[in-house]
Length: 225
Image (cartoon, rainbow, N blue to C red; front, side, top):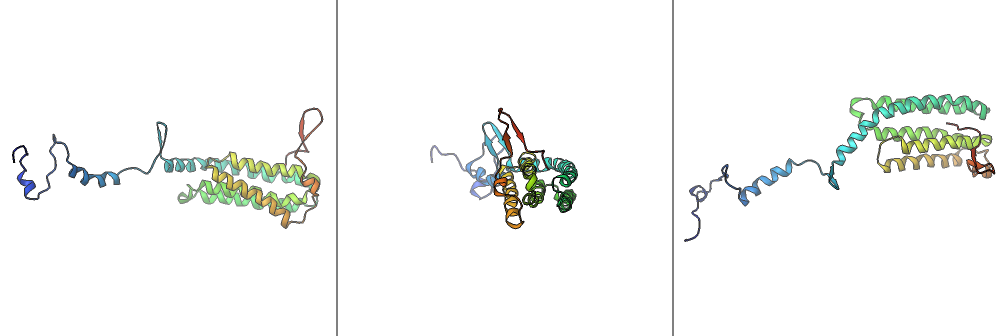
């Protein structure tokens, strides 16, 4: 017909013809190569303004970056955790051996957690390891709380340090910090249910910080870790 372009003989014969170097691809050509292009695309990304972030890669980098932080956290706080057994002897002289046993078990568990994590196949699981470490530190202070009537605020302050540390030290998503804090607080409440308490209700509800009447605040005794 007049006005129509002639059909190439190869097309008439049913042969697949690819466009030449100077020719534009047809719709059929694009349909053929689309599945190959989609298969080669990277993982889904999150766009924020003009910044494109691969969340999976970002989280993986955070996990790896936490490894040395986890090592030094356990190395430093295990020593401090055990050293404060000296203050247990002063603050809870009738229970200090029991408290020391709790501290030794907690320090050993956290050291074992780091040791296991340094296996090549497990090094990415730093969020899980940090969660365990935070819970162990707080969970082994929890049974001490109902048994320290005369030094209750000092031990609660140490318990609070673990809670704040679990939220501030690791580089992890908020849901991990929230779950760790919730679990630690839960261990404290559970301790008062399971462990016989010599702490009065009035003492248990006493604020940690008190005013001295001149606009200043001070803490009862000193911080117990």
